[in-house]
Length: 84
Ligand SMILES: [Zn+2]
Image 1 (cartoon, protein in one colour):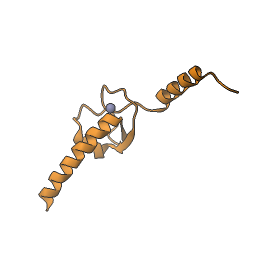
Image 2 (cartoon, helix red, strand yellow):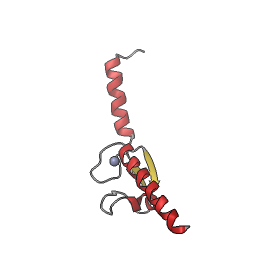
Image 3 (cartoon, rainbow, N blue to C red):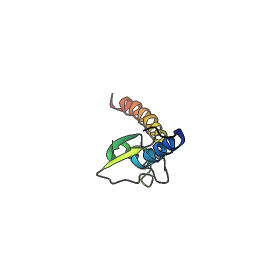
Image 4 (cartoon, rainbow, N blue to C red):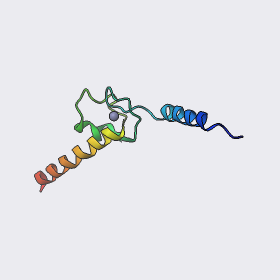
């Protein structure tokens, strides 16, 4: 059965919002794009920024994933310089 385009779009928007958990950064309502172990991302965010269980996973939206990726890249470069 064919559905009118308008209602199908509305249905899809609703299901995306329902399926995607919100980002685990405090105050961020964007849907999660990636999930990480807490200990992996914790160093790159402030203690109060992560709204997640310390033993669980942290879901990040696209923007916060970018932030993490950028921060982890910089810190890895620094860490490597220290280790060598
Ligand atoms: Zn976010």
